[in-house]
Image (cartoon, rainbow, N blue to C red; front, side):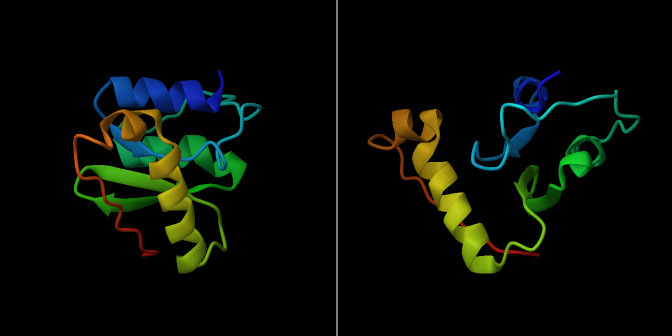
Length: 104
């Protein structure tokens, strides 16, 4: 199953997941069913084969990052994700949007 579909299914199920299409490519797939049940462990298991890590961003929210990405690169990726997100675009004139990005 495409990785992006799995991430979107998690979102639909109420798991807050932030990611960028610059990071999650259409060709990435989940090849085997994860054993983990807890959302963060589940994410870590499906992302690890692609060299992507999971970071807690805020209570109940996680973000994905490429290994070796420094704080400036992570901040830039977070801003780009916010600016390119269809939901953010729909809300931006009605709701104040902000991103606080840091590498843990």
